[in-house]
Image (cartoon, rainbow, N blue to C red):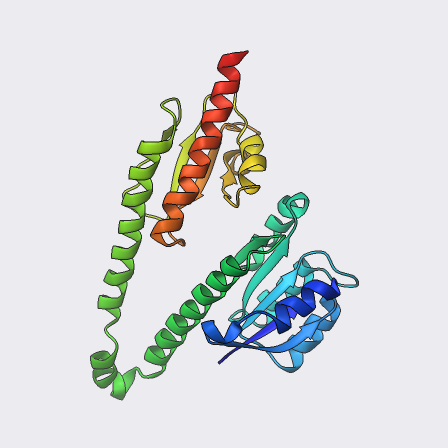
Length: 263
């Protein structure tokens, strides 16, 4: 069983996540709870879990502080940050600390279980790769028969290729004609450009309310240009959620363009 640490200063949420979630269905168990970031850091230092689920705003130490501590001292631990909509921009600062996922409050039970399940799969994958590395040398020929790294890489590429093609097809079907986007030959992202009069940050504000997130393009330009662009990731979601998320985003974009035409 994978070990979970849950940290939240709201006692109701802490109790709900630690006692009433069916973690065993995704192969996990709660190994500890913390009422603030300071307690979370102390617990991690004494008994490192596999996954940390933490609120972003807590007394003494914040979720960002916990993420920084984990990044420096226990980089193999996976982290999920719980954040309110108003705190989302602040939560994005944790990207530099390798946070695995963000969940908006109120937290969806199904979505949180899916996120944890995805992280356990990543842990399995990393541990498998580590075992292969440790077995190099005299054992390498034997290990290569058990774990074909080239085959595994090709499998991952095929998964990403399929998700990319589905994302492109869905955007072609649901995005307005005035929205243009790249059709990448590789990588994990697509770049989207909106009409000049639409600010992607305003679109993000609406899309987050429907649990759809992306990175505004202006964040990549120090001179403040390209506020009408954004980058979207198609690699880390199952196919049904790619279609659903892009469909929701397409409807939001149509609303923005329609509002402009009505002026």
